Length: 177
Image 1 (cartoon, rainbow, N blue to C red):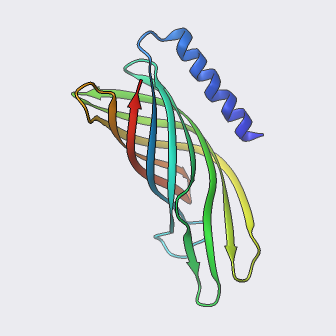
Image 2 (tube, rainbow, N blue to C red; image 1 turned 180 degrees about the vertical axis):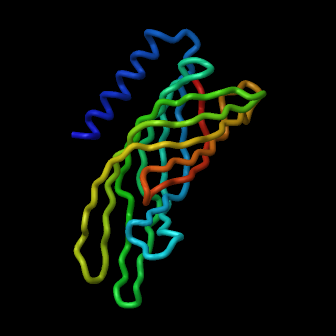
Image 3 (spheres, helix red, strand yellow; image 1 turned 45 degrees about the vertical axis):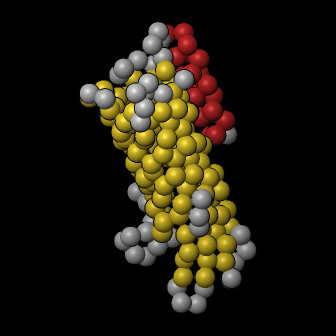
């Protein structure tokens, strides 16, 4: 239910962009990063797993945009307590964000405020595959820097905090239409 509501919210925001914005700039991006999950860890550093994120967005004007993330795991976190070996994998994650932003010279700083839903799988020698689904509010920040003189290709770096125990940092490339 939650992903359907989030999908509808993203679609409505993108349709509203066409209606209310003159200088809209839609873009797509592909990022790779690390997701840190403290849920399954007794240590302060948490468990890190790779994450591949497809980003879709629209800069409605120079101060505001909308963005959606679709992600899956790129690598698993290994959980070991000396007896049991387990593996934590990000199966899927969907996020929708409002994106306040500001241009400073040639780069853009932005914030993210929205909702995320994710599903992880825990497997191991002593357990069958166990699925865990969760959702929460999400906040983040990032920077985009043009890589070409036309401004169509951009480097992006983003940090998103999901809740007390999870966050992800990523970097990648955007293409602006």
